[in-house]
Image (cartoon, rainbow over all chains, first blue to last red; front, side, top):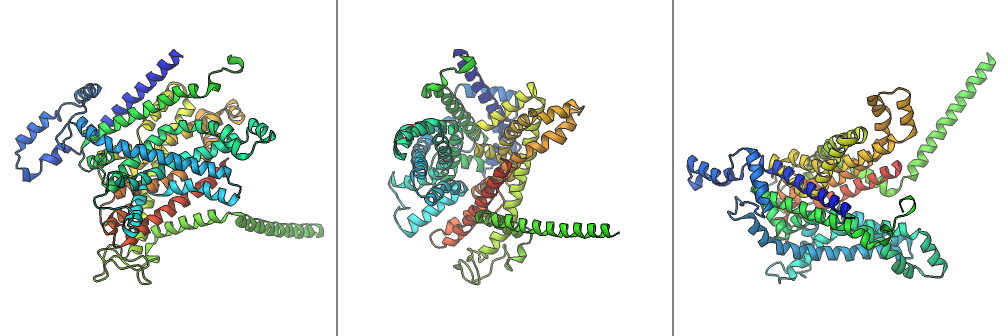
Length: 314
Length: 294
C-alpha cells in the first residue's frame, strides 16, 4: 500500500512539474509583452531607458533558463511574482479574489449535484417511457447551451421581463441566484449522464434481480441497492467536473460582473498579464492533481470490494 | 443462342428486380432514420450552405447598416430584427456561419491529425515512447481546457484562427488517448498477427489494417468534438478573444447584443438559439456514428 501511495504521489508531483513547465513555456516565452503594453504607452512619457530599467527590475531580459529556474524557485515558496497590470503581488490578487469564486463554485456545484440526482433518479423511477426519454435528454440539451448565453438569457428573463431578481444593488445572496444557476447547468449535465448510465448498469446486476424476486418495489431497490453503487463511480469524473467548474466560473463571473478568480482570469488575458494567468493555471493543475489523488486513495476506502483480492491474486 | 438470350433476359430481369429491391431497401432505410437525426442533418446542411453561399439566403449586407432602421423588432422585412447600427441580424447570423464553421473545422482537424497521430504512434511503438507520450497527455488533461485555450491565446494573440488553434490544442490529448486505446485493441486481434506473420512490414500493416479498423470511433469522437468546438469558439468570441468586432461571429453577436439586453431581446436570443441548435445537431449525429461504430 505504501509503495502504491509513494508511486501515486510521485506521479502527481511529476504532472504538476510538467504542467508548470508547459505553462511557463506558453506564457513566459511569449512574443506579446505585458510590460511593453503597459509602459510603452506614450501618455506615460517614459523614456526608452526608463522602460529598459523597468524591464530589468522584472528580470524580463535575462535568459529563459535563468528565468525558469528563478520562477520555479519562487513558486515553490508560494511567491507567484508580480502582476504587471495591477502592480501588486499575484498571491495577494489571488487571495483577494478567491472567496467570491469559492462561494460561487460551492453553491453551483451543490445545485448541480441536486439537479443531476433529480434527473437521474426521476428518470429511473418514472413509469412513463416518454417522460423518461424527455428527462434523459435534458443533459444533452444542457451540454449544448453556451454558458455565457444562458447567463444573459436568465438576466433577460428574470431581471428585465419578470423583474424577480434586481440588477441594481442586489443583496449579497440575491446577486448569487442567477450566477449559481448559470454555473450549475453545464456542471449537472455530465454528472447526470454518468449517473443515468450507472443506474441503468447496476439495475441489470443479479442482486437487483434477487431483491425484486423477494418482492421489493422499484423505489426500495433504487434507494437501498442501486443508489450507493451508482453514486460511487461519479467520483471518477471529479477532475473533469473541476475543469468545467473553472471554465464555468470564468464565463459566469464575466457575464455577471462578479469579482472572483474567473473575472481576474478574463482581465489577465485581455491585458496579457502572463504572471497572473500562469499562477492560475498552475494552481488549477495543483487542485486537479490533488482531487484525483484523493479520489484514487478514497476509492478502496469507500468500496470494500476493491480491498479484497479475487482469484489468482488472492 | 436461345439459351444465351433467355439467360441474358433472366439476368436483366434479375438485375431489374435487384435494383428495385435496392431502391425499396434504400427507401425503407431512409424511413427508418429517426426524425431527430434527420432534423439534425438538415440543420447541419443548412448551416453549411449558409457558410458556403450566404447570399442565397439573404440580400442584406452583414456589415453595412441601414440608416433609420436601428433596433427594429423582428418583422417580415427583417426576420430577426436589426441591431444598433441598423444591420439585419438574420444576415449577420448567416454570414457568421462561415467563421464558426471554419473555426470548428480547424480546431477538430488539428486535434484529429496531431492527437490521432500521437496516439497511433504511442499505441504502435509502445514501451518508452508510449510512456512518454501518455504522460504528456496526462499533463495536458490536468490543465482545465479553458485555461489552456487562454494561455495559447495569450501566446498567439487574438483572432479567428488563433482561437480555433487554441480550442484545437485542448482536444489533442483526448484524441491521442482514444486513438492509442483503439490501436492497442486492434493490434491484439488475430488478423493483425496474421498480417505480421505473412511478412507485412510495420508501416504497411499499420496503414492497411490497424488504421482503418481503429478509425471509426475516432471519427465519432471527432464529430462530438465538432459540437464542443463550436461552443468553445463562441465562448472565446464572446470574451472578445476571437474575431475583431465588425465580424459577425456568433459569440461576438451575443456579446454585442448584451448592451441592449433590456430593450432588444432578439439580439442575444437569436444567435444563441442558432448555436444551441448546431451543437445539439452535431452531438446527435455523433451519437448515431457512435452507435454505428459499436
